[in-house]
Length: 282
Ligand code: PAF
Image (cartoon, rainbow, N blue to C red; front, side, top):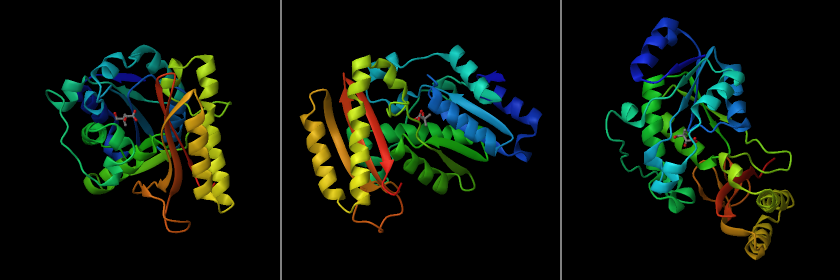
């Protein structure tokens, strides 16, 4: 596996491989790789001949400078994990090299998709995601790119970005990976104590209850009951629990009318912001 730290290094390596004649897979990440990322790399490897993993902590998608500064940067360990999962190259340019100067993001307004839920809680976040992923797609020019279902709203945004700006590029969604306990895997889980990780299971349980409610035809009541349970839980600070159409992030209007109904949750446990989701049809 090779480490490519500039656009030139990437282009030279791709030329040596005759990149455009191959089925190529791409997994964009911000590093701090865990089992969830490994499953994304493995999925890319199953569907392509060559796989590039990018590692770049993207400044334009953070709305909090301290969050950006303290984001874990663990390139060496990440390279071992990427290689073990089957990556052929890690592309890790500096933000300035990728953006061609001071990193900046142009505002993007795709309605609820960029401005509701995560977009509302983290203003400007999806502007930064769109900016960096667009630049990464231009640089890597893959056949397919893998994104994790865990960041469900990001998947919707990237699908629109690919459709409108990179037609022909296939977006592959890697299923959310859970700890044996049920906790959705996330780089942020490392900041939870053992007790916090146990408290966080309340989110998974709430999603399961809403999923059951949907299957029994009582989704509205299930959402109300689970919102009340999470609000009453002293270990959890609930931001939202809702059912929506994951294609648009517009509210759910009833069974059968949406292409991709999901229940989503965001909450803080021990000051760590966690998100999770579950399809309503499973
Ligand atoms: O999901 C992430 O890790 C990031 O948002 C992404 C897609 C790599 C863009 O920086």
